[in-house]
Image 1: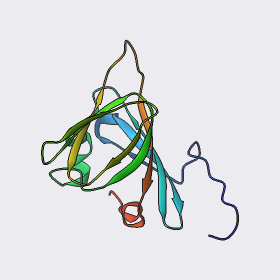
Image 2 (image 1 turned 135 degrees about the vertical axis):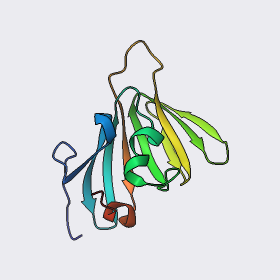
Image 3 (image 1 turned 90 degrees about the horizontal axis):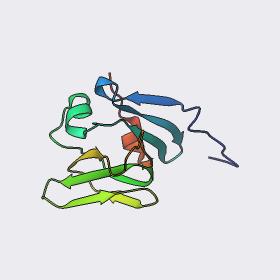
Length: 126
């Protein structure tokens, strides 16, 4: 990249939907990876709504991000668990499952920003 870069996740270069219309990942490409905004609908769980697309036993992507709204529960393959909520930074290594959690009377969506490495950005789903 040379110079100033100005992109909007409201006009993503790519949108990757999850199974059963349970959310999506909006992506913009950067020179060294990408940036995505993931939106998870109530009832979303990685093992139910992304596993059929990824065709792996658990999520093999690592994530660095920031939770914008809602709550997510993450369970690592080794049994370690964490709850992530609005305003919290996250770094999740590969090998995990996750689900959207309802913590308050009403949250329409769980949304977060994620930094993707170049290899993760290049993965395509047919």
